[in-house]
Length: 113
Image 1 (spheres, helix red, strand yellow):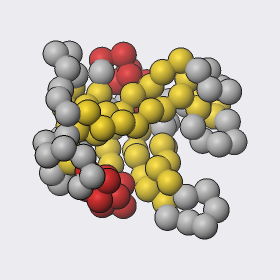
Image 2 (cartoon, rainbow, N blue to C red):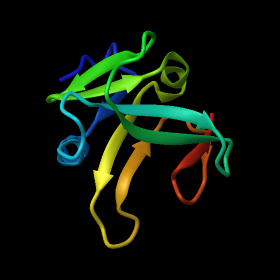
Image 3 (cartoon, rainbow, N blue to C red):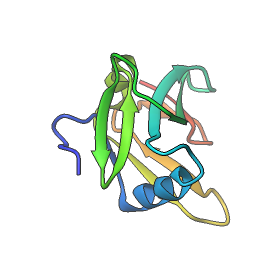
Image 4 (cartoon, rainbow, N blue to C red):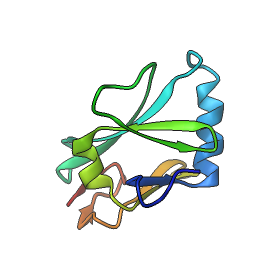
């Protein structure tokens, strides 16, 4: 489990379980990248992607074997954020709980800080 004092993000057990399933379709040793980019209906949007290697400035957090990459700019927006996975017929998928978001859109994929 990652030290919550050093990692800007945490993953729930449900998110860890889902990422592990998704990682089975990726090359061995792949990382989950969590990032924040400009765009979306509220100004900023979350992005999740799998990457084969870490960049020179990436922060790495590990949660039960899942290695997460976060670039320094995204880390500023992700402080205290929890990534969850909800399995539901309506609105299922990865959900970000970001205490820094002042406003978010209805889809939950973008926010403003």
